[in-house]
Structures are given as C-alpha cells and as structure tokens.
Amino acid sequence: MIAFEAVSKTYAASSKEGCAHAALREVSLSVKAGEVFGVIGASGAGKSTLIRLINGLETPTDGKVIVDGDDVAALGVEGLRALRRRVGMIFQHFNLLSGKTVTQNVAFPLKLAGRPAAEVKARTAELLERVSLTAHADKYPAQLSGGQKQRVGIARALATNPKVLLCDEATSALDPETTEQILDLISGLNRELGLTIVLITHEMDVVRRVCDRVAVLDAGRLVEEGPVEDVFLHPKSATARRFVREADGEPAADAALSGRVVRLTFRGEATYKPVLGEVARTTGVDYSILGGRIHRLRETPYGQLTLALTGGDVAAAIAQFQASGVRVDELSGETAR
Amino acid sequence: MSVSNIDWSEIGQATIDTLSMLGGSLVLTIALGLPLGVILFLTGKGQMLENKVANGLLSLLVNVLRSVPFVILLIVMIPLTVALVGTSLGVAGAIPPLVVGAAPFFARLVETALREVDKGVIEASFAMGAKRRQVVLGALLPEALPGLVAAATVTAVALVSYTAMAGVVGAGGLGDLAIRFGYQRFQTDVMIVTVVLMLVLVQVLQMIGDAVVRRVSHK
Image 1: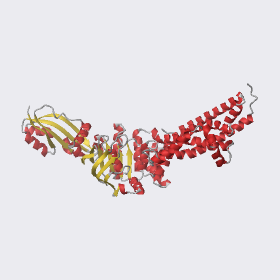
Image 2: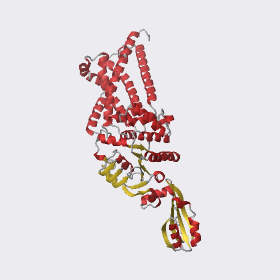
Image 3: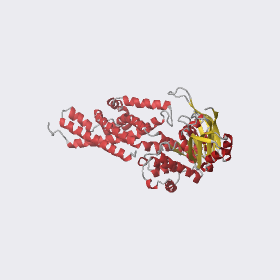
Image 4: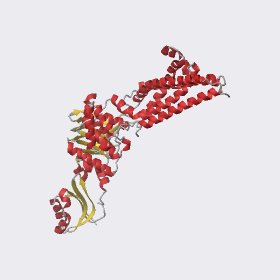
C-alpha cells in the first residue's frame, strides 16, 4: 500500500542552524494494506517528516514514496489532491477549525471536494454517529475535551472514505484513559473498515497496544523493523531496547548472583501454564526471579521472566522450557560466585 | 462661556459629514487593505506564496505610506484626489487621502492577525486536499476573523482622528468645526460639543467592534 524506496530528506541550511539538516537518510520500508504500522522514535528522529512524505506535505530529496500505486512526487496538483482524499490524517494538537462547529469541521473536507449539500449532510451525520459525537454536533471545538476533539479529527479524516489513515502523535496530548479510548477507536477502524493505518509516536506503549508491525527510527535512519512481538520482546537495536525499557522497566538482570542468568519469554497460551514449577520439580534446578513482566501485545498475552538457575541439571531445564514453547535467551554463562 | 455660539443644525450637518467620511473611507480601506494584508502575509517567509521580491516591495510601499504624516499626505494627495473624484473639498475630497493613509495601516494589522492563525490548521486543510484558494478563503481568513474585526475596529478609531485632520484641507465634519470655530474663533463651547461628539463616536465604534469580536470568537 505504501512503500519507501531509499528515501532521504535534507532540509536546506537555514540561517538559524547554519548547515543542512538530514531528517531522513535512505529509509526503505513498506506498509501492507490493512495493517497498523507504527513508527517510533525520539523527537527529531524524523518521524514527522516520514509521515508527511506519505501525503505529500513534504517532498523527498532523494528516493521515492509510492502510495496506493502512485509515486507521490510525480503527481500533479490535482493528482496530489485526489491522493489526499484517499489518505486521511489526524494530528497531535487536533488542528480543528476553531470558528467552525463540530458538524462544519467534519463537513469541511467534503465541501473542499465539492460534494453536493445533501450528501455532505448525510455523510457528516453518519460520521458523527461513528465517533459518538452526535450530541455535540453544534458545539465549537473549544467546548470539547481533548478526547472529543480527537474524535472530531478522526471523523473529519474519514469523511472522504480514505484507504489510509495517518496518525501524527495522535494520542500524545491526551491523558492515559483518553489515549486508551482513542487507540480502541483506531483499532476498530482498522478492523471494521480495513483501513491501513500508519502512526508515529514516541511511546512504546501505543505501539504495543495497536500496531502489527513497527519501525524504529534514530537520527533519520531506520534501525529496526519487524512484527511488534519481535521488536518488543527481542529488540536488536539499542534504540529499540531503550524504548522497550521505557515502556516496561528494566529487569535487574545484573544482580550479583551465582548460576546461569536466562530470560524466558512466554507467548500466548504458554503464558498461563505452570511451566516454571514443573521444570524445577523434574530437573532439580533452583531458580531466583530477577525481574519479570506480564502484559498483552494487542490481544496476545505474553510474559518475560529473568531467572538465575542454580543446581540440578540446568541444560535439561533449558531444554524442557524450550519444549514447552518458551523461548530461552541466555543473558550470561556460568558465572563465578 | 455661553451656549449661544452653537448652531445645532451646523453641528448636525458636520456629524453627518464625519460619519459619511468615516463610513466611505472605512469600506474602501478594508476593500484595499485586506487583500494587501493577505498578499503581504502569503508572500512572507515560510508561507505558501513565499516571494522575497514581491514581499519586500509591498512592505516598502506600506512603510513609506505609513511614515508620511497624515497632514502632509492630505496636501500631497490633492492633485491625485482631484483626478480621482473631481474635487479636493468636502466629504468626497477627503476620502482618497483617508484611504491612502489608513489602508497600509490596516494591511499591517491584517498581516499580524493572519500570523496568529495556528499553522497546524493550515497544514490540516492541505492534508484534506484543499487548494490554496480554499485554504485562504475556507480556513485562514475564517480562523483570523476575530483578529480581523479587532483590526478593523482599531482602524475605524484611527480614521475618526484622521477625519478631524482632514478639516485642514476643507473636508468638513466635526474636526473642521472644532478647528474653525472652537480653535480659531475661541468658541470653547463649540470645541467641547464637537470633541464630546467625537469621543462618543469612538466609544460606540469600540463597543461595536468588541461585541462583534466576542460574537465571532469561539476560542
């Protein structure tokens, strides 16, 4: 649905910064139709630039961005406008028109597209229904809460029946409870409308809750990409590890203990099985728990435990863990006391 | 001091003249200053029609006109005024210099009001597939409306004092009355009545302006 082919974006030297600034360096990635794709990175990592390349608000310095079969940079003015009607966008600060009511805000993209008044009216009512804002139809944005404003933003972005929804830090200005509601709404749109969603965020928690796949950006480079489960449970890059740590807290793996320190990863059904006690009984291995977490990745439960194994047949214990569908990563070998 | 100097019918006529000068020049000032302000804004740095040369030239024109004292502008404009409206006297003769004096001032205020508009809203409009014209007319100007009304109010109040000065070149109106009778003939009562009337006018303009701003502002 969306493909980046070695895309670079360099901003010309400004009087303030003095030298040219590379926001993105040779980024290649692809987003499949119908998936929720997350892009995570610290501020200044190039996320905003990346998402704006998709609907042509920014143009690449090098490389190509292909959206729904079109090379965005090669589209003319009209082609770009048509593309933007197929790609909705919501924003961190909502960017609603303060002088227009909720209804008028949602109707705005339809009016821009020159749709007949009757259709605008019917479609607007339907969209407000979908985001449960019918009761607030005649209010102005200043009279709404943050979550309600973002729901207006979502209704507005959906007005022209887009295939893709771009979310630019859409929950970063919201409190945790409202964030949850908005993320549920976004997941629902993905499931019910088959909408392809690209979201950028600096919060791993957002990625964990809604994304299928995630790309990690650091200083304009793509440092890691893959299914959320892999990146979240077994991050390879330092940047990804940092984000995971922020989301979960770091287990105290380096406590001065004897034995072999291993990290067990349980996924899905294995999470709830009493594997640990079983293995300890049959192999005579003792364990101390150094750290752990049990959570959900979208709908999948998972657990991660960091253990120090001592005594008994450690090798057999590890084999038995693996046989029960638990992934074992050795964090340290046989350490001296 | 006696009230015998006051010719109420003359004051009535002067009030009507002041109001017509104000009304006529305000409408034309907005008609000229609004597009000028919009172009100043749009050709500015980082805006959608960024153009250094056009912006520099327009900005220079505005600054030149704004730095000429209005009394001087009144006199310098006489030949142009005669060419435009056939006379340099009366209400008609006052309107061209008033507009030339106030439009650049209003244009600057418009530019400032437009800068106050949240850039995110403009970006969102483009992201929805708006054309530039649609962004300006559908998002930029409506979002700036409270600021634009406030700018028009300030300009209207400034125009009231400009109309008084226009009395110097025979424009008529309350200011003219204040100068000819109140000042030159020491008729203090005429001076007081005219000044009070202008004060009331300014007060009413400001109140109307504030009420409209409140009405159109939904922040």
